[in-house]
Image (cartoon, rainbow, N blue to C red):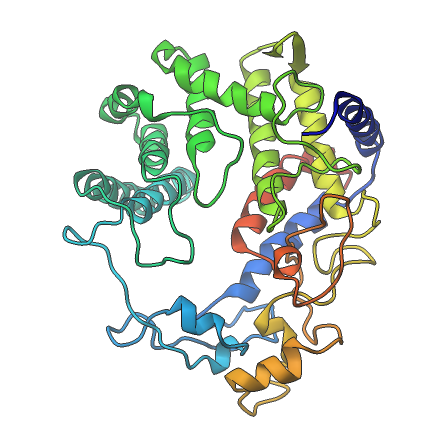
Length: 414
């Protein structure tokens, strides 16, 4: 932890950054479009005719067959294009004998959320999603156990209680069935104050959803509302209970490895929480003797989006293809090797390492919209393909950033 004087300076610097960010002029519509486009570069299988990322081709066409799905260890030993992928594609599954509560409950949450999106557009499809979500939740709850088949990649360090609450919260939001609310209340002891929202830890996601229900009259959910406020207080500069510091340039900094995954998710929560306060006419929250209004929470969240887009000491965008200065040596196999359409000859596992991974040249394919892991704790970024902790993009960083930048669209002049 920094000394009191250093902490005060960091707060002053961050407040100055927020002030500057409030007048920053970024094209959030463009940023949102590029962030979504990133996912087309991540597609697997038979690509559709409207595929916009032209340097990608069909890949992993045999996935799903018993003798062919992924092996993380062998996959990571190779540096090759998805189109050339020849590592084992071992199939894993969860069932009553090999439970995977996290995977099943997370899928249930996703389907419930999607059912809300499609409710007015395609009622039949929405109901199908909700039905499948209920079945997955019942399976996840009945056969409780952590999924271990993916380890050492994406092991569940936080356990499965957060995913069960996360799924139940979305199911209640989508169905309004009291049995899901009762499940949440009966298991509120699982909820705990946390300082991150991540692919592993969903507690604050559930807590934020349930905070809206609390303000809507469900006073039995006070524990979740309190835990959600603790999360906000752990992040806000100037808070008496701050736990996550900011860099000298004002970036939320949780840990060195792919830090922007935590920044983007935290920022999304800040925006949503600010909206909840406004919707329910709540003046703000108290973090000790300090009060933060919804406007102040939103302003800090905006400063994080603007930092990622270029309002930072490096004066660079951490989204590939956005702005005039952005990472050129993305730690991404497909974009670092010439497209199969340009170089149809197979690039083998070892060839990729020696000819492309170790190259000092920019990636031949611009993976537009990809958000990298970000700068270090001193706001410095070394654009090096080998530095995966800072140069690697992930789907979960982009997903959270989409939620954050979407909140700012109303401020963009068209």
